[in-house]
Length: 149
Image (cartoon, rainbow, N blue to C red; front, side, top):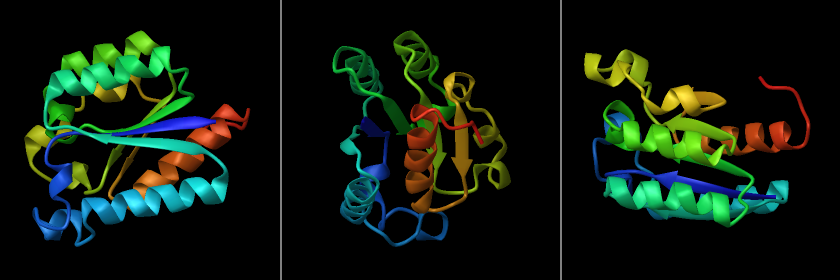
């Protein structure tokens, strides 16, 4: 089983940007945690981050040709603005989980809108970086024939 972990704008600044909302773990620390968890649960992962919307669309589309089993995506601010990311996820038809480190539902009004959510099997918010691991576990269960949570 192979999962893509896709991160949008500013996530490369984890540990620097607004630690009150996003914690002190760096992006490199996040990647290490994801890779260790992948080994533990027996899946292959590829992690990708870009600050550019079109690059994120390209990466999502790549999942179709690379026969990727599932996507974990934190679109960052593009969550609230990008119909292009929504369309990309819909077009590939690969199970996807939306992740947000902070509890977006308790933040600014504009963060209440998520375009990509309509194409996702699950959304995880407010669990910190552990939300990525929860998303990976959910996809493994879903892809192994387990029930949706």
